[in-house]
Image 1 (tube, helix red, strand yellow):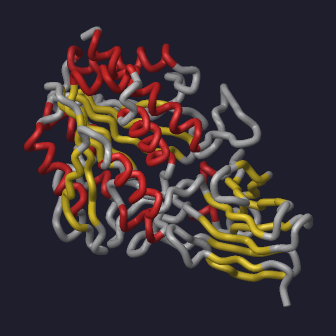
Image 2 (cartoon, helix red, strand yellow; image 1 turned 180 degrees about the vertical axis):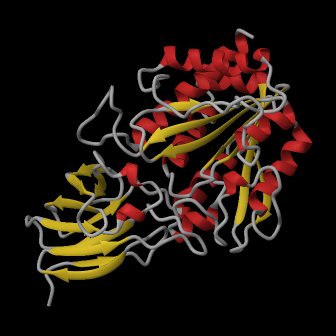
Length: 377
Protein backbone atom coordinates (compact mmCIF):
# COMPACT_ATOMS: atom_id res chain seq x y z
CA UNK A 1 0.00 0.00 0.00
CA UNK A 2 1.34 3.43 -0.95
CA UNK A 3 1.65 6.33 1.47
CA UNK A 4 0.13 8.84 -0.96
CA UNK A 5 -2.70 8.99 -3.51
CA UNK A 6 -3.31 11.28 -6.48
CA UNK A 7 -6.66 12.12 -8.11
CA UNK A 8 -7.63 14.29 -11.08
CA UNK A 9 -11.16 13.19 -12.06
CA UNK A 10 -12.72 16.61 -11.51
CA UNK A 11 -13.35 19.90 -13.32
CA UNK A 12 -10.13 20.88 -15.16
CA UNK A 13 -8.20 17.97 -13.64
CA UNK A 14 -5.23 16.74 -15.67
CA UNK A 15 -2.52 14.27 -14.68
CA UNK A 16 -1.47 10.71 -15.49
CA UNK A 17 0.01 8.52 -12.77
CA UNK A 18 3.02 6.53 -13.95
CA UNK A 19 4.15 5.16 -10.58
CA UNK A 20 3.80 5.79 -6.84
CA UNK A 21 6.32 4.52 -4.34
CA UNK A 22 6.31 5.61 -0.71
CA UNK A 23 6.14 9.39 -0.58
CA UNK A 24 7.16 9.87 -4.24
CA UNK A 25 5.20 9.84 -7.49
CA UNK A 26 6.11 9.85 -11.18
CA UNK A 27 3.54 11.68 -13.27
CA UNK A 28 2.86 12.91 -16.81
CA UNK A 29 0.52 15.51 -18.33
CA UNK A 30 -2.32 14.33 -20.57
CA UNK A 31 -2.47 16.04 -23.97
CA UNK A 32 -5.45 18.11 -25.09
CA UNK A 33 -8.06 15.92 -26.77
CA UNK A 34 -7.44 15.67 -30.53
CA UNK A 35 -4.35 17.89 -30.22
CA UNK A 36 -0.68 17.71 -29.27
CA UNK A 37 -0.66 20.46 -26.64
CA UNK A 38 0.30 19.51 -23.08
CA UNK A 39 1.27 21.88 -20.27
CA UNK A 40 -1.69 22.35 -17.92
CA UNK A 41 -1.83 20.12 -14.84
CA UNK A 42 -4.24 20.05 -11.91
CA UNK A 43 -4.53 17.26 -9.35
CA UNK A 44 -5.18 16.46 -5.70
CA UNK A 45 -2.66 14.83 -3.40
CA UNK A 46 -3.66 12.85 -0.32
CA UNK A 47 -0.70 12.21 1.98
CA UNK A 48 0.28 12.07 5.66
CA UNK A 49 0.51 15.53 7.17
CA UNK A 50 3.92 16.86 8.12
CA UNK A 51 5.87 14.55 5.78
CA UNK A 52 7.57 15.80 2.62
CA UNK A 53 6.37 14.40 -0.69
CA UNK A 54 8.23 14.43 -3.99
CA UNK A 55 6.21 14.70 -7.21
CA UNK A 56 7.99 14.29 -10.54
CA UNK A 57 6.17 15.42 -13.69
CA UNK A 58 8.06 13.81 -16.55
CA UNK A 59 8.31 14.18 -20.34
CA UNK A 60 8.15 17.96 -20.29
CA UNK A 61 10.77 18.43 -22.99
CA UNK A 62 7.99 17.62 -25.47
CA UNK A 63 5.38 19.83 -23.79
CA UNK A 64 3.86 22.78 -25.64
CA UNK A 65 6.28 25.33 -24.16
CA UNK A 66 9.39 23.71 -22.62
CA UNK A 67 10.75 27.19 -21.88
CA UNK A 68 8.02 27.55 -19.28
CA UNK A 69 9.56 25.08 -16.82
CA UNK A 70 12.95 26.58 -15.83
CA UNK A 71 12.57 28.90 -12.82
CA UNK A 72 8.92 27.87 -12.41
CA UNK A 73 7.37 26.89 -9.05
CA UNK A 74 4.12 24.91 -9.03
CA UNK A 75 0.99 26.41 -7.48
CA UNK A 76 -0.35 24.68 -4.36
CA UNK A 77 -3.33 25.10 -2.05
CA UNK A 78 -4.71 23.17 0.92
CA UNK A 79 -8.08 24.97 0.98
CA UNK A 80 -8.53 25.74 -2.76
CA UNK A 81 -8.86 29.44 -1.92
CA UNK A 82 -5.35 30.66 -1.15
CA UNK A 83 -2.72 29.56 -3.67
CA UNK A 84 0.97 29.68 -2.79
CA UNK A 85 4.03 28.21 -4.52
CA UNK A 86 5.70 24.87 -3.87
CA UNK A 87 9.49 24.64 -4.28
CA UNK A 88 10.12 23.14 -7.73
CA UNK A 89 13.13 22.42 -9.92
CA UNK A 90 13.45 21.46 -13.58
CA UNK A 91 16.00 19.05 -15.07
CA UNK A 92 15.85 18.87 -18.86
CA UNK A 93 17.98 15.70 -18.84
CA UNK A 94 15.82 13.63 -16.47
CA UNK A 95 13.20 11.44 -18.20
CA UNK A 96 12.73 13.77 -21.15
CA UNK A 97 12.51 16.84 -18.94
CA UNK A 98 11.23 16.58 -15.38
CA UNK A 99 9.74 19.10 -12.96
CA UNK A 100 10.31 17.96 -9.37
CA UNK A 101 7.91 19.43 -6.81
CA UNK A 102 8.75 19.09 -3.11
CA UNK A 103 6.07 19.89 -0.56
CA UNK A 104 5.22 19.13 3.06
CA UNK A 105 1.44 19.31 3.60
CA UNK A 106 0.19 20.79 6.86
CA UNK A 107 -3.02 18.77 6.53
CA UNK A 108 -3.41 15.46 4.72
CA UNK A 109 -4.43 16.88 1.35
CA UNK A 110 -3.23 19.49 -1.12
CA UNK A 111 -4.10 20.57 -4.64
CA UNK A 112 -1.44 21.34 -7.25
CA UNK A 113 -1.92 23.20 -10.54
CA UNK A 114 0.00 24.99 -13.27
CA UNK A 115 -1.76 28.15 -12.14
CA UNK A 116 -4.60 28.67 -9.64
CA UNK A 117 -7.58 26.93 -11.31
CA UNK A 118 -10.77 28.75 -12.23
CA UNK A 119 -13.53 26.14 -12.23
CA UNK A 120 -16.63 26.18 -14.41
CA UNK A 121 -18.73 26.33 -11.24
CA UNK A 122 -16.91 29.50 -10.18
CA UNK A 123 -17.40 30.79 -13.74
CA UNK A 124 -21.18 30.26 -13.49
CA UNK A 125 -21.20 32.00 -10.09
CA UNK A 126 -19.29 34.93 -11.61
CA UNK A 127 -21.72 35.25 -14.52
CA UNK A 128 -24.80 34.89 -12.30
CA UNK A 129 -23.62 37.46 -9.78
CA UNK A 130 -22.75 40.01 -12.47
CA UNK A 131 -25.98 39.39 -14.39
CA UNK A 132 -28.02 40.09 -11.25
CA UNK A 133 -26.59 43.61 -11.00
CA UNK A 134 -28.59 46.61 -12.19
CA UNK A 135 -27.85 47.56 -15.77
CA UNK A 136 -26.16 44.26 -16.71
CA UNK A 137 -27.59 42.07 -19.49
CA UNK A 138 -26.70 38.39 -20.00
CA UNK A 139 -26.45 37.27 -23.64
CA UNK A 140 -26.15 33.57 -24.50
CA UNK A 141 -24.03 33.72 -27.63
CA UNK A 142 -24.15 30.05 -28.61
CA UNK A 143 -23.86 26.49 -27.37
CA UNK A 144 -20.44 24.85 -27.43
CA UNK A 145 -19.72 21.47 -29.00
CA UNK A 146 -19.89 19.88 -25.52
CA UNK A 147 -23.27 21.52 -24.95
CA UNK A 148 -22.23 24.32 -22.63
CA UNK A 149 -23.48 27.92 -22.91
CA UNK A 150 -21.11 30.60 -24.16
CA UNK A 151 -22.11 33.69 -22.18
CA UNK A 152 -21.50 37.39 -22.63
CA UNK A 153 -22.30 40.23 -20.22
CA UNK A 154 -23.21 43.67 -21.55
CA UNK A 155 -23.38 46.95 -19.63
CA UNK A 156 -22.92 50.69 -20.05
CA UNK A 157 -24.73 53.54 -21.80
CA UNK A 158 -22.00 55.12 -23.91
CA UNK A 159 -21.19 55.10 -27.62
CA UNK A 160 -17.73 53.52 -27.46
CA UNK A 161 -17.95 49.79 -28.17
CA UNK A 162 -15.53 48.01 -25.80
CA UNK A 163 -14.90 44.27 -25.96
CA UNK A 164 -13.15 42.34 -23.19
CA UNK A 165 -12.75 38.59 -23.65
CA UNK A 166 -10.65 35.94 -21.98
CA UNK A 167 -9.51 32.35 -21.82
CA UNK A 168 -9.50 31.45 -25.48
CA UNK A 169 -6.71 29.19 -24.19
CA UNK A 170 -8.39 27.40 -21.27
CA UNK A 171 -5.23 26.60 -19.30
CA UNK A 172 -4.52 30.33 -19.03
CA UNK A 173 -6.68 30.68 -15.91
CA UNK A 174 -5.00 34.01 -15.08
CA UNK A 175 -7.38 35.44 -17.68
CA UNK A 176 -10.57 34.58 -15.82
CA UNK A 177 -9.15 35.74 -12.49
CA UNK A 178 -8.54 39.04 -14.34
CA UNK A 179 -12.17 38.95 -15.49
CA UNK A 180 -13.37 38.46 -11.93
CA UNK A 181 -11.48 41.58 -10.91
CA UNK A 182 -12.83 43.52 -13.88
CA UNK A 183 -16.43 42.56 -13.16
CA UNK A 184 -16.08 43.34 -9.46
CA UNK A 185 -14.93 46.82 -10.45
CA UNK A 186 -17.55 47.40 -13.14
CA UNK A 187 -20.51 46.25 -11.02
CA UNK A 188 -19.53 48.36 -8.00
CA UNK A 189 -21.81 51.43 -8.15
CA UNK A 190 -19.43 53.41 -5.94
CA UNK A 191 -16.33 52.80 -8.07
CA UNK A 192 -15.37 55.97 -9.98
CA UNK A 193 -13.59 54.02 -12.73
CA UNK A 194 -16.72 51.96 -13.33
CA UNK A 195 -18.95 55.01 -13.34
CA UNK A 196 -16.73 56.76 -15.86
CA UNK A 197 -16.54 53.78 -18.19
CA UNK A 198 -20.25 52.95 -18.01
CA UNK A 199 -21.05 56.54 -18.96
CA UNK A 200 -18.76 56.52 -22.00
CA UNK A 201 -18.92 52.90 -23.19
CA UNK A 202 -21.07 49.94 -24.06
CA UNK A 203 -19.05 47.02 -22.71
CA UNK A 204 -19.28 43.49 -24.11
CA UNK A 205 -17.56 41.00 -21.81
CA UNK A 206 -16.95 37.29 -22.47
CA UNK A 207 -15.35 35.92 -19.27
CA UNK A 208 -14.57 32.50 -20.74
CA UNK A 209 -14.39 31.94 -24.51
CA UNK A 210 -13.60 28.23 -24.14
CA UNK A 211 -15.81 26.43 -21.59
CA UNK A 212 -15.19 22.98 -23.13
CA UNK A 213 -11.41 23.14 -22.94
CA UNK A 214 -11.65 24.61 -19.45
CA UNK A 215 -13.75 21.76 -18.09
CA UNK A 216 -11.67 19.10 -19.87
CA UNK A 217 -8.38 20.35 -18.40
CA UNK A 218 -6.89 21.46 -21.72
CA UNK A 219 -4.06 23.90 -22.14
CA UNK A 220 -4.83 25.51 -25.46
CA UNK A 221 -7.79 24.02 -27.36
CA UNK A 222 -11.53 23.46 -27.24
CA UNK A 223 -13.27 20.07 -27.05
CA UNK A 224 -12.28 19.07 -30.60
CA UNK A 225 -8.65 20.17 -30.50
CA UNK A 226 -9.06 23.62 -32.08
CA UNK A 227 -6.83 26.50 -31.01
CA UNK A 228 -9.47 29.24 -31.00
CA UNK A 229 -6.91 32.04 -31.27
CA UNK A 230 -5.93 30.88 -34.74
CA UNK A 231 -9.51 30.73 -36.08
CA UNK A 232 -10.53 34.38 -36.30
CA UNK A 233 -10.08 34.81 -40.05
CA UNK A 234 -12.27 31.79 -40.88
CA UNK A 235 -14.20 30.33 -37.92
CA UNK A 236 -16.58 27.41 -38.44
CA UNK A 237 -19.55 25.86 -36.62
CA UNK A 238 -17.80 22.48 -36.78
CA UNK A 239 -14.44 23.46 -35.29
CA UNK A 240 -14.76 26.87 -33.63
CA UNK A 241 -18.38 27.85 -32.90
CA UNK A 242 -17.14 30.01 -30.02
CA UNK A 243 -15.20 32.34 -32.32
CA UNK A 244 -17.93 32.25 -34.95
CA UNK A 245 -20.49 33.50 -32.43
CA UNK A 246 -18.25 36.16 -30.88
CA UNK A 247 -17.20 37.53 -34.26
CA UNK A 248 -20.81 37.63 -35.48
CA UNK A 249 -21.77 39.67 -32.43
CA UNK A 250 -18.82 42.01 -33.04
CA UNK A 251 -20.10 42.52 -36.57
CA UNK A 252 -23.40 43.70 -35.04
CA UNK A 253 -21.93 46.07 -32.47
CA UNK A 254 -18.69 47.21 -34.07
CA UNK A 255 -15.53 47.47 -31.98
CA UNK A 256 -13.64 50.58 -30.88
CA UNK A 257 -11.42 48.98 -28.25
CA UNK A 258 -10.71 45.31 -27.54
CA UNK A 259 -8.59 43.45 -25.02
CA UNK A 260 -8.02 39.70 -25.34
CA UNK A 261 -6.71 38.38 -21.99
CA UNK A 262 -4.12 35.57 -21.87
CA UNK A 263 -1.23 34.02 -19.95
CA UNK A 264 2.31 33.35 -21.18
CA UNK A 265 4.26 30.28 -20.11
CA UNK A 266 7.84 31.48 -20.45
CA UNK A 267 8.09 35.27 -20.08
CA UNK A 268 8.21 36.41 -16.40
CA UNK A 269 6.35 39.68 -16.99
CA UNK A 270 3.02 41.31 -17.75
CA UNK A 271 3.00 42.80 -21.25
CA UNK A 272 0.82 43.75 -24.21
CA UNK A 273 0.95 42.64 -27.83
CA UNK A 274 -0.48 44.87 -30.53
CA UNK A 275 -1.39 44.58 -34.21
CA UNK A 276 1.73 45.61 -36.06
CA UNK A 277 1.83 43.99 -39.48
CA UNK A 278 -1.90 44.12 -40.34
CA UNK A 279 -2.59 45.05 -43.98
CA UNK A 280 -4.30 48.35 -43.09
CA UNK A 281 -1.71 49.47 -40.54
CA UNK A 282 -1.12 53.21 -40.23
CA UNK A 283 1.05 55.00 -37.71
CA UNK A 284 -2.01 56.91 -36.47
CA UNK A 285 -3.91 53.68 -35.86
CA UNK A 286 -0.91 52.13 -34.13
CA UNK A 287 -0.45 55.16 -31.91
CA UNK A 288 -3.82 54.40 -30.29
CA UNK A 289 -2.33 51.15 -28.96
CA UNK A 290 1.01 52.66 -27.98
CA UNK A 291 -0.73 55.45 -26.09
CA UNK A 292 -2.75 52.94 -24.05
CA UNK A 293 0.42 50.97 -23.37
CA UNK A 294 2.18 54.08 -22.05
CA UNK A 295 -0.76 54.91 -19.77
CA UNK A 296 -0.85 51.41 -18.27
CA UNK A 297 2.92 51.41 -17.80
CA UNK A 298 2.65 54.61 -15.79
CA UNK A 299 -0.27 53.40 -13.68
CA UNK A 300 1.09 50.12 -12.26
CA UNK A 301 4.51 48.62 -11.47
CA UNK A 302 3.10 45.19 -12.35
CA UNK A 303 3.22 46.16 -16.05
CA UNK A 304 6.30 46.73 -18.20
CA UNK A 305 7.31 47.18 -21.85
CA UNK A 306 10.85 45.73 -22.02
CA UNK A 307 9.83 42.05 -22.35
CA UNK A 308 7.27 40.77 -24.83
CA UNK A 309 6.71 39.32 -28.28
CA UNK A 310 8.51 40.50 -31.45
CA UNK A 311 6.47 42.74 -33.74
CA UNK A 312 5.22 41.29 -37.02
CA UNK A 313 6.82 42.79 -40.15
CA UNK A 314 4.70 45.01 -42.39
CA UNK A 315 1.87 43.04 -43.98
CA UNK A 316 2.80 39.79 -42.22
CA UNK A 317 0.35 39.76 -39.29
CA UNK A 318 -1.50 36.48 -38.75
CA UNK A 319 -5.17 37.39 -39.14
CA UNK A 320 -6.20 34.13 -37.52
CA UNK A 321 -5.21 35.76 -34.21
CA UNK A 322 -8.01 37.80 -32.67
CA UNK A 323 -6.08 41.01 -31.93
CA UNK A 324 -4.88 41.28 -35.52
CA UNK A 325 -8.26 40.41 -37.04
CA UNK A 326 -10.21 42.77 -34.77
CA UNK A 327 -7.83 45.66 -35.48
CA UNK A 328 -8.02 44.99 -39.22
CA UNK A 329 -11.75 44.18 -39.56
CA UNK A 330 -13.13 46.93 -37.32
CA UNK A 331 -10.35 49.51 -37.21
CA UNK A 332 -10.25 48.96 -33.45
CA UNK A 333 -7.51 49.64 -30.96
CA UNK A 334 -7.02 45.96 -30.12
CA UNK A 335 -4.49 44.25 -27.91
CA UNK A 336 -3.54 41.00 -26.22
CA UNK A 337 -2.79 41.19 -22.51
CA UNK A 338 -0.31 38.53 -21.34
CA UNK A 339 0.26 37.58 -17.69
CA UNK A 340 2.91 35.13 -16.43
CA UNK A 341 2.73 31.67 -14.89
CA UNK A 342 6.00 32.48 -13.15
CA UNK A 343 6.65 35.42 -10.86
CA UNK A 344 7.55 38.84 -12.27
CA UNK A 345 11.30 39.07 -12.86
CA UNK A 346 11.48 42.74 -11.86
CA UNK A 347 8.79 42.82 -9.13
CA UNK A 348 8.70 39.39 -7.41
CA UNK A 349 6.48 38.21 -4.56
CA UNK A 350 8.15 35.04 -3.23
CA UNK A 351 5.27 33.27 -1.48
CA UNK A 352 2.61 33.46 -4.20
CA UNK A 353 4.45 34.66 -7.29
CA UNK A 354 2.00 35.94 -9.87
CA UNK A 355 -1.34 35.15 -8.23
CA UNK A 356 -5.13 35.42 -8.60
CA UNK A 357 -5.06 38.45 -6.35
CA UNK A 358 -2.57 40.23 -8.60
CA UNK A 359 -4.58 39.29 -11.71
CA UNK A 360 -7.65 40.92 -10.17
CA UNK A 361 -5.73 44.03 -9.14
CA UNK A 362 -4.27 44.36 -12.63
CA UNK A 363 -7.78 44.26 -14.10
CA UNK A 364 -8.80 47.44 -12.30
CA UNK A 365 -5.55 49.10 -13.39
CA UNK A 366 -6.32 48.15 -17.00
CA UNK A 367 -9.83 49.59 -16.71
CA UNK A 368 -8.51 52.80 -15.12
CA UNK A 369 -6.01 53.08 -17.98
CA UNK A 370 -8.86 52.63 -20.47
CA UNK A 371 -10.83 55.44 -18.83
CA UNK A 372 -7.80 57.74 -19.00
CA UNK A 373 -7.22 56.69 -22.62
CA UNK A 374 -10.80 57.68 -23.48
CA UNK A 375 -10.69 60.93 -21.53
CA UNK A 376 -7.48 62.07 -23.23
CA UNK A 377 -8.36 61.05 -26.80
